[in-house]
Length: 453
Ligand SMILES: Nc1ncnc2c1ncn2[C@@H]1O[C@H](COP(=O)(O)OP(=O)(O)OP(=O)(O)O)[C@@H](O)[C@H]1O
Image (tube, rainbow, N blue to C red):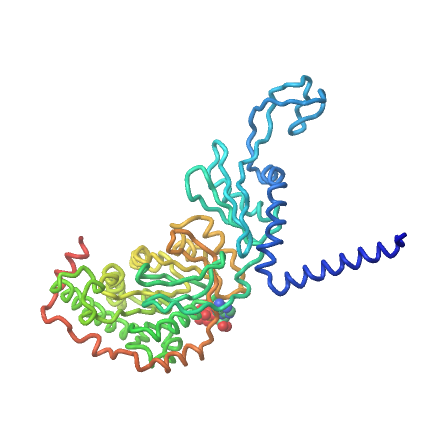
């Protein structure tokens, strides 16, 4: 007969071995552990507790239902209705129908059918409550079609530590970090030509510009810098920059050159019957130009009235590039600590042309509103909640029309400087770039007509 004590020790030893194996699996290959075991257990738990969670988060609705009980007088439903007959019409809390949750790399996703009278905003409002109820990092709400919402749950913040992903290799496309859903964060100038990159000091704006520089340095593109911090940020990248302006006077001259370049490309396209430079034959196509602007507010600030004309000229030139640059291969990446309407109408107009929006941690609500305000109020709340100890975390308006929390890869300045030196031979000279490619002059009235259109 087996000794019960031995059996107990044997069972405990098996249990300990099993727990150790599970712990090791989870520790060494969390992804497979989560997809094969952890996720499945969580999914079952989520389904079983959905009624309680939905009730607690205010996502249920009272509906009248026929109630059958074998124990008349039992307290039924929400605890306020006493059932006196076997069949009784009572008000019950109905939970929204939930599909089977699907484990994802960083959590799970589930589709929920809205109850009558509910809108996706009800779920967005309850997202924080759901996150606490499930004990997870965040719950994001999307509505892919009417009457449905998708709850995307991330268990742990995937942006605390980022795994590097390979470069995209496509022209004007740079993988700059990761989105909260684990997908790469891509800046693709051909899809979204102009970007606004806002953030307080030490929030990670320059790091993002460094990544762009590293990503674009090896590509056949021209890089142009406006560094209104006196050149301290971009001067070290000089070998890979075709031109650099460090004060207002230089900025004005450089903007004039860019406008002239744009007019010339316009004439070239018109002569060739092309709508944009990408429709030109490869041999005729001019080099795309990415313009990096650091500290844009400096371009709009006036110390006294004597600067008024210069500010107006700068503002108009930037706006023209933003309005027409895309077709002629001139793209903007504008960084600033503060982007407020107090800087003048030029900033507001420029912002409207920049469909790519990146909002790092900001000090003032207006900058967040200016950068993201027309997206979604929840994006604003998320931007204002970015902690100071996670530089590089930002709210990003993505190409799919959604907004995401994202974090850039960390690229030290010396790596960006090294990239600039290594690829210095790919830098087109400014004279080469600005030399007229098309003899037929395009006049300013042509540009004005296009702008009016
Ligand atoms: N994605 C990131 N991951 C880790 N550290 C980062 C990241 N982005 C930036 N940092 C670090 O945060 C600090 C501030 O970054 P950065 O200089 O890019 O900020 P900034 O917004 O440009 O600040 P400033 O306006 O003062 O120049 C730097 O020490 C940088 O190394």
